Image (cartoon, rainbow, N blue to C red; front, side):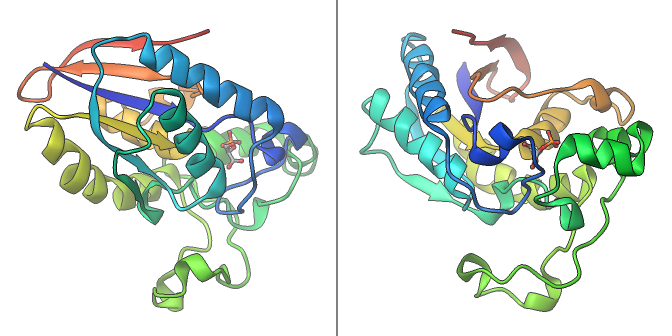
Amino acid sequence: MVKLVLVRHGESIANQQNVYTGWNDVPLTPKGQEQARRAGQLIQQLGDFNPTAIHTSVLSRAIMTANIVAETCDWLYLPLYKTWRLNERHYGALRGLNKDVSRAVFGKEQVLEWRRGFDSVPPAQGSPVIDRRYAKFDQRLMPRAESLHQTQLRLLPYYEDQVASRLVQGQDQLVVAHGSSLRALIKYLEAINDHDIIKLEVPNAEPIVYTFDQHLNIIHKEILRG
Ligand SMILES: O=C(O)[C@@H](CO)OP(=O)(O)O
């Protein structure tokens, strides 16, 4: 048996202000840092989870959370892999907009579709993200908005190559990412259909623990709440 633990970052400044974040880079709030520490304690209390690597995005809120969890669990020595493929879904032109305001402007149904639908793509931003993180990529190929489905398609190659490949060797793995990138991964792991995914929420800093058999079938799932 092998374990995979998924953690969404702690509360960010954007979460606190109730604005769309996506690829915007924002830090954790003090409350978010405390949530990350608590998540680390809960993971440590599992007792039988010994990851060989930690995987996160290239966004500060997830990296900060991964660092706090690693420090709390005494795992600062582990490799910490950072990849844009675990980034939050790109929220396009909605980035920075207040979520309540977006409901008033576009209507509840449309906003629910954008936020929780599988194939719905939010309005695209006018020009690509200018950010050092992505400088090595062809800017013409950078997303300007992503559906959950598109997020899943760019995430899964990383999951298969770097996470699942270690799990099948019996190595526990820790993934620290974002609400929608984790929803995309959970949809795949649990084979949730396109309709039911609308109901799945991933709260900040509540570790989700999967126990798999040697073929990566799920034997047990547990959510740690403190
Ligand atoms: O703003 C975002 O990037 C995400 C996650 O915080 O929000 P939502 O839950 O609306 O998809």
